Amino acid sequence: MTVKSSRARPMTPDERRASIVDAVIPLILAHGAEVTTRQIADAAGIAEGTVYRAFADKTELIDAAIERVMDSTEVLDALAGIDRSLALEELLDQIVVILHARVSAVVAFMGALGPRDHARHKPDHGRGHAPLGEATDLVEALLEPHRGALRIPVSTAVDYIRVLIFGTAMPFLRSATPTDAHQLSDFILRGIAAEGE
Image 1 (cartoon, rainbow, N blue to C red):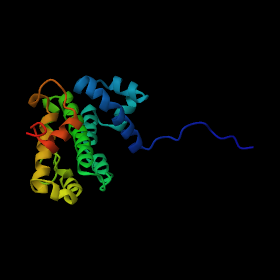
Image 2 (image 1 turned 30 degrees about the vertical axis):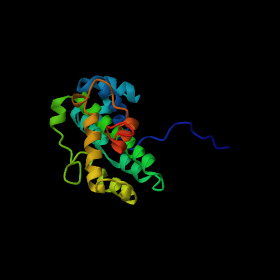
Image 3 (image 1 turned 30 degrees about the horizontal axis):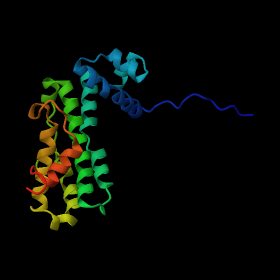
Image 4 (image 1 turned 180 degrees about the horizontal axis):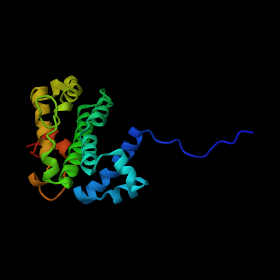
């Protein structure tokens, strides 16, 4: 009779690095760049020395966390998964909710790190280095079937959407009240005037 071992398969070096990055992101949000390797090790369920076997130092780990947060794969996949048969209102709402969550998460993370680490990273946003530029082509493709319902060209609409999402995600550009992405979507679609005005 063969007895199966209940021991988990050892992680590969890449898996170990990824798991440590998973653990450090919420810690950076809570403690900024001052997070300690002891806190990181405890959160990851590993010995402190394992952190240093996976990363040369804390700076390299923070850089890996920034790279993960800046990675646009997840947001692009979410946009690509939107049902293109939706009515314009619902389609726009999904676009705005996805993009606003993305920008808000990046802004919160980089704000927690502070200016020193922020200055070391100048991300390429894609498509002319515009904020959310990496999503431009997808958003244009989603809105293109509705171009007849828009008062402006699709490319201009996408520019305005991007600017409003980016601006409302910046704490220093808005009031203390966090922006409701659904309300922002409605504003983008209908403007500032009350119905009938």
